[in-house]
Length: 79
Image 1 (spheres, one colour):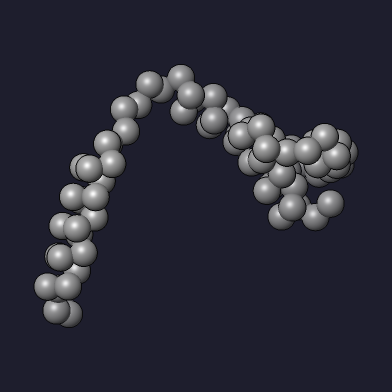
Image 2: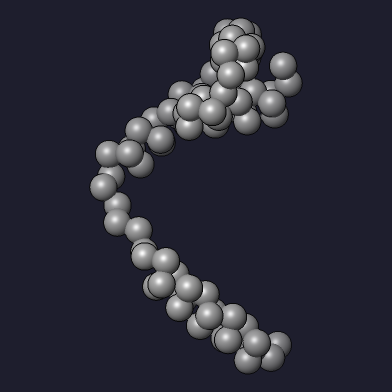
């Protein structure tokens, strides 16, 4: 498994989207690759911190209003 694929599978594992075969291949790759092992460890810690953070997200109406305001500002921008 190439490192790029290992990174993608690492993300899938954390979102519970990886197949059993992908998990097995990732674990074998992590045993052999120090860089991917470190990436997986850091990525796991980051995901845990985000889950524990209790961050409130913007509601869809507010997001849409911000997007419209940004689009309007970009249209009016003249470099």
